[in-house]
Length: 271
Image (cartoon, rainbow, N blue to C red; front, side, top):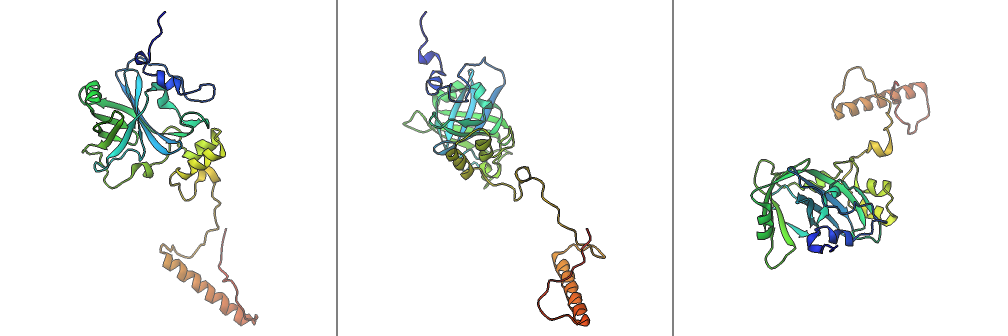
């Protein structure tokens, strides 16, 4: 039986670059064509941080590595380097690629949803201009991919003008958590068996966390409540009441003949 050439199998390069005995990534198998096309963006802390932008077409995920990530501001032209096609199942992948494997590092599923081409997507890819609509959990609306001159793999990704534009915002920084698990990059690296090097690399690009991440530190203990005769809504009023309590305590110590010296104010606290 005649073996198929690489040109017959769009996932041949993907499979050749990976050792599936060591990596948790899904093997490359072409999926049946679907009427609804999937889309995803994966934040990937490999040697260098980048965001993998993927669009399903012809049973595979067409893929671009976007170093600075996608943007909802039309002024931002993001370099997008086209990479090998990935299997459609890869759109669900979140975890750690083993150190030493191609792309070794932490992968976070940053966005997912569906996409619709505007016009013929095959002709658009051939000519070097692909326009499409994204229906994601973080990104939405019209996007454009334009191939740079004199290159086969370098494109620009940018947002089209519509109601989903958010000028001046860096959406990848504003929304750093996984749409699949709610985790941050370093959570994934730690929980999925990353090396210390991978965990440090993931922590460096994890993004802003809440001031008191309840899920990681447990419930925040409740301090005793100061109870006053009437509600005090302003910070200034609260401090004024504390000062009054302090003066009252000092006067009582003076009347009792206690020795002078710095003391903490006696503030009535009821549990």
